Image 1 (cartoon, rainbow, N blue to C red):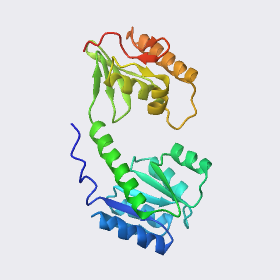
Image 2 (image 1 turned 180 degrees about the horizontal axis):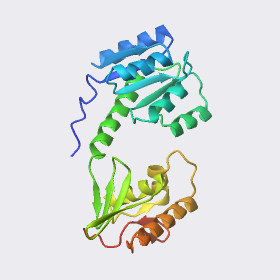
Image 3 (image 1 turned 120 degrees about the vertical axis):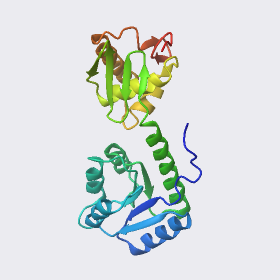
Image 4 (image 1 turned 135 degrees about the horizontal axis):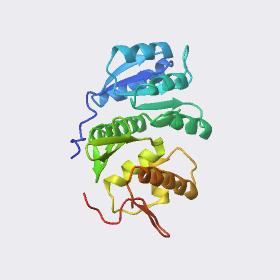
Length: 242
């Protein structure tokens, strides 16, 4: 069961990293109107100090900043944290958006912006974060496979011994997704959108990941999974038996 999300973002602490005082003032006003708290930072170094000092729920992060720019801050954050980050930029550039998403940004807002849209995006990202944090602590088990979402690890139980199998991040995402609904047939496009959203993967790329994942499972005596449904995609198992 998911928590009640209706008021989950109230009292959330938002770190606004913006060197333009006027823009920062506007953002602070609208965020506080939604009963959220605001911490302000004017440059990259201040932002990092705020992250050490306060318990932050989401960051609004401008790209062009003194001392450390937004890309550098995002890179530092992603080394240790999945803290939600929304990038603010005056550059309506697809290259920047793609780079930011690949680096781990949760959303992008282009200046000039509608403050109400900013609030809606903040709430949407916070809502997703609550759901993900709720889901992430639930170990996924299917037959003798145990999937640990916290550490992104997969174990195979063989008697009294649990064997860790070495999966790539994409292989892990595919297995974790399909293990939640073992009889569901996933199209290749669904697997791309859920497991490789930042890439320009083709259908044959999905086939390659599935093939490698199946081989690793079979090497650990887990056979008969990842079934090809011709003309549609893949399902984890033909007959779902816990």
